Image (tube, rainbow, N blue to C red; front, side, top):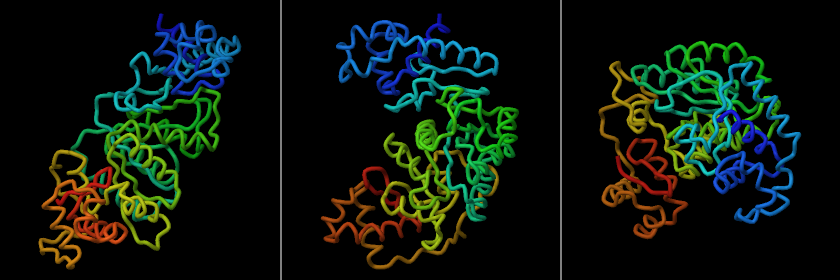
Length: 369
């Protein structure tokens, strides 16, 4: 029975030393969580890179009793359990090597719908708020699901704008369902469910919102979507880690550039400079790069658009023309061909991105637009 497999999956994941990657090795080797639970201690030599210490806690009856309580909690609170090795994890997330073994979900959503992750600082400015409002207004005729982390600031604005624009939204939590953090967003979490959205977490019901959980949560936010948009973030902000996960998963990352003196834009500017995100110049360009259909209404633009031909500096023109003639050229090859060091080329490429002349891809490759 599947319910029995849920029981053993929860118990197995609760065992010390069994994270998501080891869990995946165990069920891949033994076929089911139940078989792994019953056989791993005796047959651990079948497992590549796993020794007796790693499997020592498997079979602990305390974990099985915990799993029984967890199943009852989920049944009582209408929580759906989604197990990766039963092919119940969302498709894109399942592609990630460190995808969660188990997901706990409140609410239901069509998993086939396109998902877009939008993240940013808790200290949202009017600049970030305006961008989010314009983005949702411009995409009101496009069908997609927004994904964010239910934090204050940007995350909260994303979920609220989704609801206002009648778009389903997924809030990924950094704790179990016995808690709701931050408490200020409790009403918002209820509204998300009422409006056809989802609350999602990999943490069992007893897990509190500990600091380390938030970085772990961010990989799910990145893994659920083919693209992540970073609206505002400072140096080392949590959203930078979400972008890093998205890069690791070979997903698209877009960042909203801002003033170099604005602490809430410095993380975005750094992502763009390091070629870890594509600069957003206009919402129209962003929508195009996301592959959305053209909206029926006039699209709001982040920066005023002009039909006037952009005048490039000599260095900008040289680099632009070379990229145009050599699509997807790498930074190293570009530096070699035009005889300029890469640290001098990168700022010029950033300028060209902001002007909407060049697009960067992972692996520091560029094309002319």
